[in-house]
Image 1 (cartoon, rainbow, N blue to C red):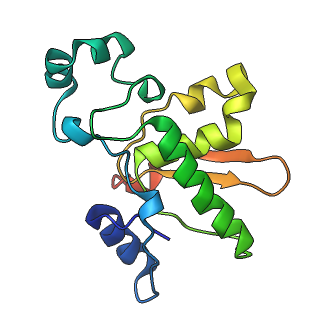
Image 2: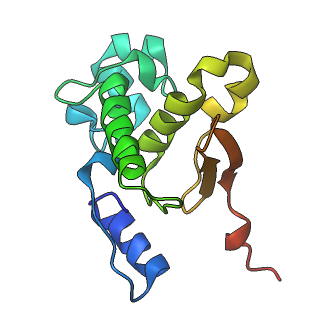
Image 3: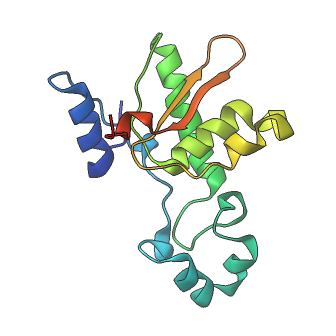
Length: 152
């Protein structure tokens, strides 16, 4: 399973090699509307009210022409429900930071302080996050990049 955006889809195809990859738009990155392609400084200069929320508080802003964090959470929750309904015991999902944050909030947002570090993580490109969802969801691996270490 992969976001249908080219960067994620390409990565999924490299990981899966000759096996098929199912693209799904619900795993796309947060739609930033008029903010697309801008740095946070550029956004803050054009929309000073956004600067009050800060660049790492996606739950508090709604980019003009974009989507809210609640909307991202809704589509990711639907995608997760579909995976469970289809009976997958294991699933690889190649996606972006926004949907990963939505997934963490979906599964762990009610745990407050216990999960604060995980909920505030800044995901690294090509990182791996693993979640077990049987029973009470459990975070097994967060933002892991050990596979990228080329020093050995």
